[in-house]
Image (cartoon, rainbow, N blue to C red; front, side, top):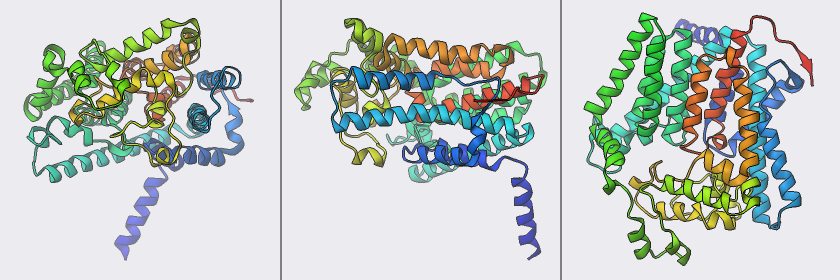
Amino acid sequence: MMSSNLLISKIKEWANTQDNFLLCFLLLLSIDMVILKPVVILLGIIYLNKQLAIKNRLGMPWFYVLIAALECVRFACLNNDYSKAHTVSFLIGISFWLMAALAFLIIRTIVYQSNNKKINNTLIAFFYINVAFSIFNLISVMIKSHSWNPFLSEDLNYGNSTGDYIKGVFMAPCFINMFVNTFFAFYFIQQKKYKNMLVACAVACFTSCNFANIIFIPFLIFAFLKNNDKQLRKYIIYALLVFVGFYALLSNGNLGYIYQSAFNSNQSINWQSINHNSKEDSALMHVNLGFKYGKLQSFQETIDYATAKPKQLLIGAGIGNFSSQLALRTSDVSGLQKSRLFKYLPTYIAPDFRDNHYKIFKLLYSLPGGFHSVKHQPNSTANQLLGEYGLIGVLLFFVFYVFYFLRHYQKMQASLYMLLMLGAYMLFDYLFEYLSVVVFFELFFILECKLQSTQPAEIKTV
């Protein structure tokens, strides 16, 4: 009985050292379940109530609101399709941009109202909960593959693809887990919690997101060269050794994959041959990918589409109409893991999507899972912004999102690294629609600005 009371006492003591609402908010919002995200945002609004209407000098990135406003004007004035399917797609797309804006306001409010130690403890709690989930993912793969090292398994479901299963609490593609852990790595560098940084690097490494690791490792090396802290340098060397050991000993197949992807044309898809033998609809017969990789082809398609007509260049195809998770999830592409919500919604395939990236997606998902690599998928925030929102959308992104952070550059240390990495990571997927990676970047930025402020925040009412 005494031990039970002691355990309860310890749990209460632990809970009092952090912001429990923020922890629950981050855990639930991070889960890649479409239906869960608006519920979590609504709970945040209810919990904070009128406090959400308080702002400080930090303001907010108005990009989210402006991009939603742009699409509302387009839908009302320039739209020719008011079908149920298109209207539902439009409303879902708008809701995601508005949820992103609300998530920023909720986190900003919590961070500025809570003390720094509680926020730091909350982030560490989230981090280790995610580490525990990631370890559980790896152990599950070991059991299913009947191997202590599934990275070397000859089973095509595992082997080089083992990292795909290490999703952590995000339950999304493994690179989401990887991206967030790289942000934590630089947060822990700033906090001088170098052992935690090493753990973050290890989780990022074991997701085996090869192309993302190629982006992350140079940032680690730069941090090594820039800092004179001997302890930091020692732990960065340890982190780099983790990557070397992983690729050289535990998963040399992934090392070979990187080499073959870069130098061996046999690793590309013989698109013309597949099209010739394809039993898909006749539209797919016109897919003629001139590049080794589908992603490069998708970039070319986006540029060709944008430059074909002035209207397309200026305002793009519209939300969910060219290249986005929304466009893909509302389509009829088979083999795609969809949220249950989209299975009950009407299928919507915009003509501009059907004539471009839809063909690549449909072709890819008709092939074995080994071809579903980021190098072949059109997923990219760059494709989304230029293809769906045109130059106006791209301009809004740089002026009201990127510049919003850069104008605070004097307060940015770790978050500046994160911003640069985020820019590169956006080539991998439609990151805004996950409401996870970008949310954590914004959280680290808000916290860093608060920590770097030498004077109390100026409080104003909206």
